[in-house]
Length: 486
Image 1 (tube, rainbow, N blue to C red):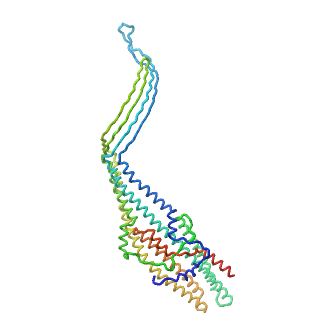
Image 2 (cartoon, rainbow, N blue to C red; image 1 turned 90 degrees about the vertical axis):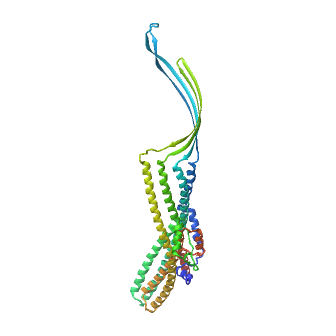
Image 3 (cartoon, rainbow, N blue to C red; image 1 turned 60 degrees about the vertical axis):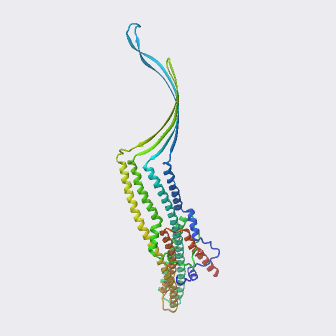
């Protein structure tokens, strides 16, 4: 800025005066730290990052030897009766044989124990090879998304923080405007009573006062909404916020080149980095699904034992057996898919289309990144110029109000002129403050677009913030002072 604004004069005009016993104002960094502990979005991003980190051990685990153990114990009993056919010579020695059914009773008891250890080792499985390669990209994308969420939290906190400050400025401005109009209305009534002005001046002052009351009600609603948005991020209400002080500096972006900032953004913007990884993961998915056409080769080995005891009693016969077998095997297992009904080819085509969509998404994010970077860069420069212009506008509006008030006192200006000049002054002050908040938000957005937004940027802003009372505290102090003077 070419010349610093007379901050104390503005504070006096807007009611930002020292209030005894006012609550300690929270800084931007304190609000961010509170949001870091409470914001659901950042917690969701962290949980998703931790979940994505498991992709690597899962992909690596299925490629390592797989060992399983199994065992079983069974005991079975069966009993019953039946018949079997037997040739009998009738009568004996006659040489004639007949089939005679012979009844029998059977009872069987069997107890078997089995156990085995099975080992398999992948020799070639294309899907697992692709998964190993894809897991690294999944983890990298999760890290980029988490960092992007942290930068987004900084911007969201900054936006909500300065929205509250802006809403407080508007409420204080409308309140001060209403009080000034109330004084003008009282003076107009007194002048009308002694015949110095016409009734139309009183009516115009009354209409302006009624409008100011409505504006103040609307400003209170806007402030309540802004505080709710901040509470949504921090989890609780923040009673008072610090605001940029008189010595607050404004600096042009460094590097001082729009193209340099665009190059930075295209290289390290986190949303763009994540989209590039998405495209690579989608490309790997095509290779992964083509595995349905490829053979698989595994080394399989097994070691086991089967032990059984059986008793069988069939009438006059009795059989008792015991078995104990050791089983071990090793071999190479090859599986070659021949026909899957066309599902594999369909899944490959689906992956190709999804990869095409991810490429278009990457193109879209690239363009959005370039656009947002240029917009933020130009926003920083334009807000710097706008703050300087509004600073001068405040001084000019204040001088114009004094001149209009003097003209009204001598009868050369109307009450409407005074009210308009008064409104213009408060409006210029509010716009001046808002332009400074917009400058800070464009600085944060520019760094976010370039991918280098850090908590240190909040610390740099924080050192220029100063405590100020809330509008409610200022109004309460004002009413107390008015009551004490009566």
